[in-house]
Length: 519
Image 1: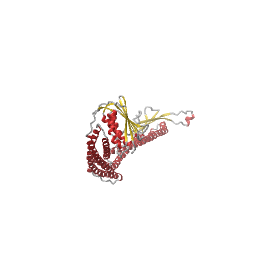
Image 2: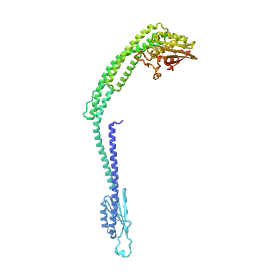
Image 3: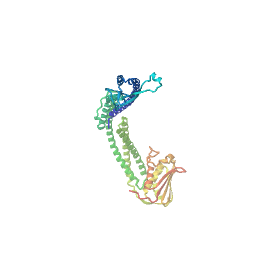
C-alpha cells in the first residue's frame, strides 16, 4: 500500500502531465495544420512561377537560363528536385537539378519516401502573327516536374513535440521537488504525532512523553492538543486507580451484603413452604420484603453506575464529574445495602424463632371450606386490628388434592393487601370469599367492599415492587407472590377487576387436583 504522500504527488503529476499533454497535442495539431496550409500555398506559387518563366527557355532551347531558374527555385527548403522535359526529347531531361547539384539525366527522377511530385505542362506563348493566322491553340513545349519534400514540416513537428515533452518533463521534476518539500512540512509533524499515538496505544500512558511543540500555527495547535490530552489521560489514570481502590472496598461490602441477601432469599423461600401462615408470620414477611427491596434497588443502581463508569473509562472520555457522581452513588448504595441487610438479617432471625412451631409444606387432600376457615381464623388478630371481617360462602364439599400451604399464602397475601389498601382508617371493612366447583377446576372469588383499584393500576398490580403505599410499609411484592404461586406452582389463573357494587374482585381458577410440583 503506497503512502499518502506518494499518492498525492502521483495525483498532482498525473493531472499536470495530462493537462500539458492536452495543450501540447492541441499546439501540435494547430502547427501541423498551419504548416500544411503553407506547404500547399507554396506548391502553387512555385508551379505558377515555373509555368511563367520556363516556356521561353524551352522555346529557345536555352538550357543555361532554365538551369538558373530551377536552381533559384530549389533553394527552397521544401523542394528537393526540379526536372524540365522537352517535347522534342521526351526520353531525356532537358534540365534536372537536385539539392546536391544539377545534372542532365536521361531517365525520370526517382521519388523517395515522404516526397511529392507535381508536374505542369509548359506551352508556348501565342504571338500576334500567329493570332492573325487564326491559330489560337497553344503549342506544348514540354513539362516541368517539381519534387517537394515533407521533411521540413516533419522536422518542425518533431522539434515541437520534443520541446513539449521536455517542458512536461522539466515541469514534472519541478513539481515533484516542490511537492516533496511542501508535503514534508505537512507530513513530518503528522508522522511525529502518529508515532506518539502508536506508542500511547502500545504502552502505559505514564511512559509516553509529551511532543515538542511546533512553531507552525496549525500543527502547533494539534501537538499542543495532543499534549493536553496526554496530561488529562495521566490525571484520569490517577483518578481511575483511586476509584478502583474505592470500588474494591465497596465491592467487598457489596459481597457481604449479597451473602446476607442470599441468606434472606433462602429464608423467604423456606417461609413460602410453611404449612400455616399466621398474622405474625405475614407481618414479618412483609417487613423482610422492605429491606430486601431496598437492597436489590441499591445493588441495581450501583451496578448501572459501575457499568457506566467502565464504559466511559473504555471510551477514554471520562470526566472528573463522572468519577465524583460514581463515588457518591457507590457510597450511598453501599450504606443502604448494609443497613437494610442488617435489618433483614435481624427480621430473619426473629422469623426463625417463631418458625420452629410451623409445619413443612406437603401435598395432601383437604376440604376447601374448612381449610379456608382455618386460614382466616389464624388471621383474626390482624383482622381485628384493622376492624375487618371475612365472610366465606360457596360449595361446602369441595375436596382438594393440592398444596394447602401455598393456597394459605395466597389467601393471606390477598387479605393483607385488602387490609392495607382497600379500607379507610377507622372504618369497618368487609371481605367476601366465595368458592365453586366446575370439574376439573375450582373457582375462588375474593372480593372486598373497599375503594377499588384505579383503572390505570389494574394492569400493573401483579408486577413486582408495584405499590401505592411505598414508604408506608408497602413493598409491592405481595400480589406478585400471589400471581407466581397461582400460575406457576398451582397451575391456575388469577384475574382482577373492580366489582360492580364496589371494591376489588380477584377471581382464582385452580385445578382441584394439582400436578406434582417439580423439586
